[in-house]
Image (cartoon, rainbow, N blue to C red; front, top):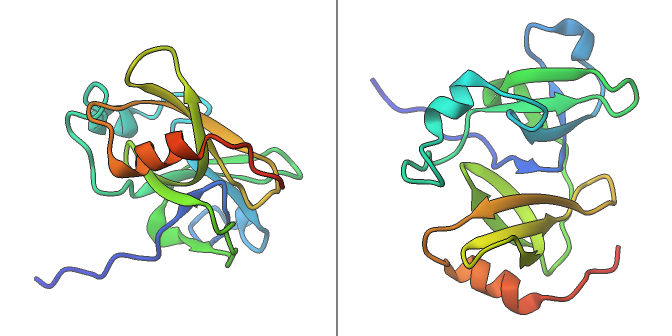
Length: 153
């Protein structure tokens, strides 16, 4: 059976449209978050094995939020999401944190040698942030640590 080509990379903080079975969420821009952002998704926790021992290539489910109504669509499949084109700032670094991609701007200390708070760009013109624990500092994290500047949005 042939493998299907992966869809476009979805960045947390971007805008998407949804075309799945929940029709009341169609035809509006939605804000993309990790599936576990506002709670616990059993499928997400099954893939998360203690700070990244088992790192999925890319997650196939997300949370999509209507920022006008606050309504959340939990566990939205990648196949049901279409990214709305957005141009990220030139200094954005694509960083994979636990299978989700972020257009990161910089990091700040996160409470330990391998802990970081990653500040990331969003299509909504505010900075998001998420905490992560890294086993081995990768080149992208080193670059973000070195940037250390606060971007102007």
